[in-house]
Image 1 (cartoon, rainbow, N blue to C red):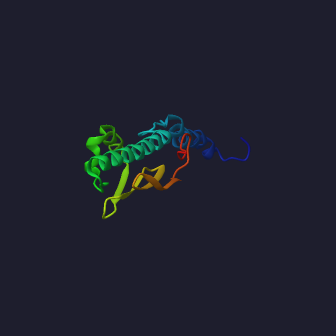
Image 2: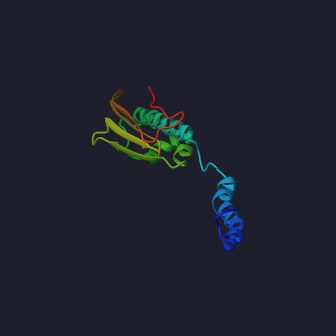
Image 3: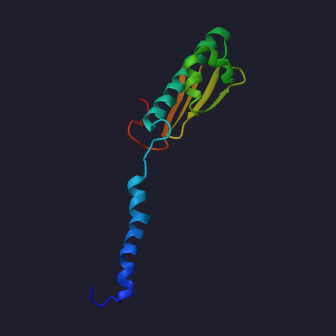
Length: 140
């Protein structure tokens, strides 16, 4: 090597080995593991939970002549709802004072859905994609 003092020539292989160990080796050995469900699975669970809540509310209204604002009243009507809720979904549920309408919001970290129903008619339905990804779409 021309122009490099002999003291540095001896250290150059050690510096190169150190650089490989410090920068290249961790990038090669890093494991890319997925923690939890995929974005499309979370979106599907969010949509499923909204459908189950809507069905349960309608069944509850048939049995009690009013909608409920208590999620605990709906879980026994659809056991699968408990499975969806266990995945970390956030649910807000509210019924009008006369019980003839309700509003439900179901959210995950990828999708947020809102549905309002008055008597038997859907009065509002909205969807917001919070984190886009493969298979993350609003329902029709």
